[in-house]
Image (cartoon, rainbow, N blue to C red; front, side, top):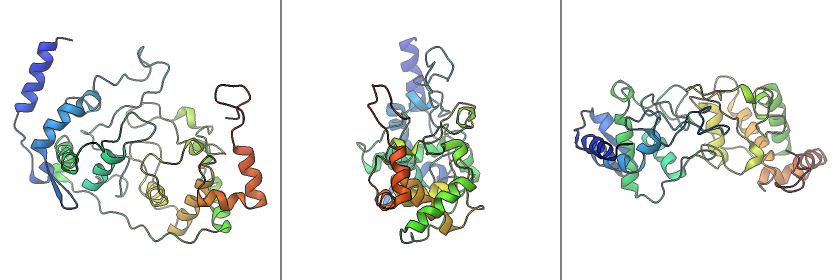
Length: 293
């Protein structure tokens, strides 16, 4: 790389004025308002290496899957802000996220990816970044963020709820991608690609306690009902009723066999659940033989 040209390019980008609409150039998160001008400075300090100069997800830190540098590893492409297709949203599938949605991703980071939490930045910094990110896509010139979906109160946790969720997991064919035990190893798992035609793995529920877009049951419910745009994970808003979605949430929590959630504790307290969980738990050590994956 020619370092002098690189610095010259950065200087030009930072000095260039922003010609954007008011909707693009601002963000509003609670009482904090973000400004794209300030966010531009932050973007080219922290974000361009992965997301690219133009925000198209082709930064120098990303190597396309199958290239010599990335092979044989799965290297998920950074978010393409130009396309403005976001996984983590509180809005219906196909719609733009709210400012709060993008802000939440900056705070939380995205598990199982190279996107870290930017909790070290100030609230104002993150709000400014959100405002600038919106200038990278033409969609914000003509579209508004979708309306947040309604998330009804979570019903009481019962064994019957978990059992019904288990039935839905089979009926909706979630196992084809996520696997019978939720380990992300279903028969379709190796064939999946995202909207960038890059290989993508289904979520492995047994691998942790949090999800791509959050940690709570409320977050998991939203994933069902909004879908993860840009991935094979669809929205189920037109397929299942809210009470069914909550049953599915309760069952999926039991697949996180290393995380002592209320759902797992209740499930293990039944004969059926105890036998299933015992069979699903890993045995041995990660570096030894005989590990049940």
